[in-house]
Length: 407
Ligand code: ADP
Ligand code: ASP
Ligand code: MG
Image 1 (tube, protein in one colour):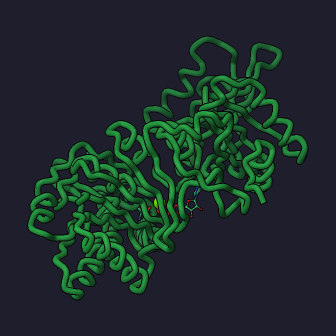
Image 2 (image 1 turned 60 degrees about the vertical axis):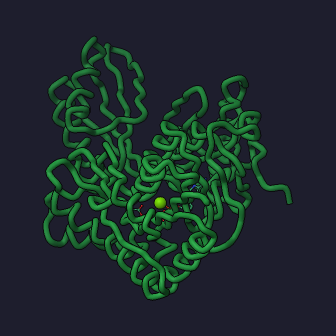
């Protein structure tokens, strides 16, 4: 008998028929004698619609109330699945985040889980219930509802699996595992059977949205075995585990693409000590994360400073940069560009191989794709290019690094 946490994403619970399919899977595990905790997302599109409603209600929706609103998407699916299971004669009970004991910090919209008191879920499981938990939500120390950021149900599931010491956390989604790149962009993408936490984390950070970044951080920290699989078929899926023999030998194991970044450039910035600090400090104070930074020295004691932020933070970052640009005496304040993409190649094997960057640049050049910014780490190389070339770049790199499926 195993303790399984099963998470189903938005497309898997998009309508009553699909929730019935989810109930079939849950029922099968339960009938086998397993204890089952189900974590659900909202129906696909619902969170977006709720955000759009909030924007119609107010130009700048109150953050506390926005969380109250967004949490209703997952409340709906949890209640519906529990109803279906009960109507089939099973003992099932829905739990909202706070009822499942999920305590978070107070950062509305991007809250971090601090602690999970799994007592009520554990008691229900012991009494033979199937626990159906609303994903993506928790409550802070004042009892206010919080949400965990887009894609946050993955993190709810992994965190619950960790607190209950579950045997496995199954992430059921609309693809049958983690691929060498997004299979919707590249039809030659290959399924990866086993991937290390480290590589999965890098892929998530760099734009593979199949798992939310924090869910992988959690899994890595607490050693939770994560199994990514499809809710639409019986394929094997991908195991995300501590380390993986197949992956370590691969120089490049995956390609990602992130369309969620925007670029800001401050021109003719005085080339003096302390200027960068003056520019980046107010951004940090506004909790705006800066990703890539590049500084080009011009003649005459000036530099051009370019950096990227997420699209969500773009307008605020632009305002702050305009203000600090003036303060530090940049003579041409700013050009900003939103239509960029970041393509990255990732692989643990890069640690011990040279020439990966050259192959990447050569492949992009062969398609006449201009590289705007480059950044590297031990296990990845990222290039900023124009968004319109993103899909072409992904397919070109996938093939250049020998990742295409054998036909
Ligand atoms: P869910 O609603 O189930 O949480 P998501 O849309 O968040 O599903 O994540 C699944 C999607 O992630 C897939 O439909 C796929 O397009 C995308 N994706 C991006 N990169 C990858 C990858 N490397 N492997 C698998 N899927 C990926
Ligand atoms: N419903 C939320 C979202 O769309 C959380 C999730 O699906 O994981 O981002
Ligand atoms: Mg998701």
